[in-house]
Length: 371
Image 1 (cartoon, rainbow, N blue to C red):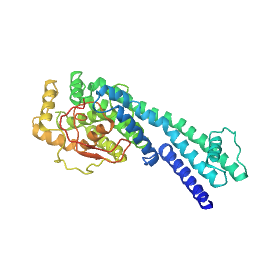
Image 2 (cartoon, rainbow, N blue to C red):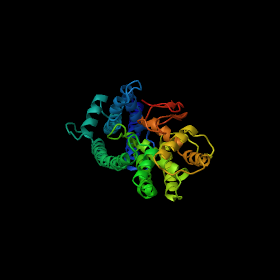
Image 3 (cartoon, one colour):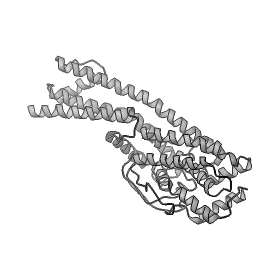
């Protein structure tokens, strides 16, 4: 019996320390550290919501269900931490002298929730009750302070995504954006009005979505909006502007593409998505030459000036797109993004082995719609 009680104390300490580390990694440390407890909680919630959002259902219904996934998982996360602390101290109290597990459970619950209807006997157990009460209040306070940070980052992200609808339509399209700017005579101002703003947006997304990865699954207020498809639209706009549009070279387009693919890669790193870190410009991409030619026809019909050598333009576009092609499409799959041109309307053969979502293989399906 003595050995069992000693083991119970050790197990209780391990559980409490592990729970506290999970809370600190998830909320306090400003880096994308992986907490096994947090990850398992989100994955379990994803399986539950995934059952109600089966692929056989219409996209609008799945979107309504998945809109609750990240908020519900986030709100219930403190309950997981509190349960861990409750169970750990329960084992501890039993190990240091409580007569039975039920008695230890009552002592732990009374201390953790500061109910005070049970007073532990002896100074050591009383001191531990004070510690447990402080931890319980600390975990709740931590989450209360955590939520404004989450929703502040979400609001900043969605403000830019919403503004993109005015410029690129819904779902967003790089061709639509360039044609609209040509119509209003602002094609030469795309760099200042779009590229400069979205460079800062990508930096903010990289920081917030790796420090608080649950943000990746927060869905936009409108079902046809999505932060990943918006990112793809802006990156494709910059790639077309740098490779195909017949205007003087704008370094802001180059900087935006580089900032954008670094941002998407950093977020993908957290979810274990594999991608080539240094792809060759000639590596294949998910966009076909025929799709590129169709886009050029749309741009020409909208009055956008194009370069004379479209063969070279295609090679230049492919050389830019290859840097973010795989991670963009993989992220669309991960978040179940709505259909958008050149992003969520296709999939690649990649593995998402370790994320909040259930592991699955993303099958290559060129041009297939998600609806």
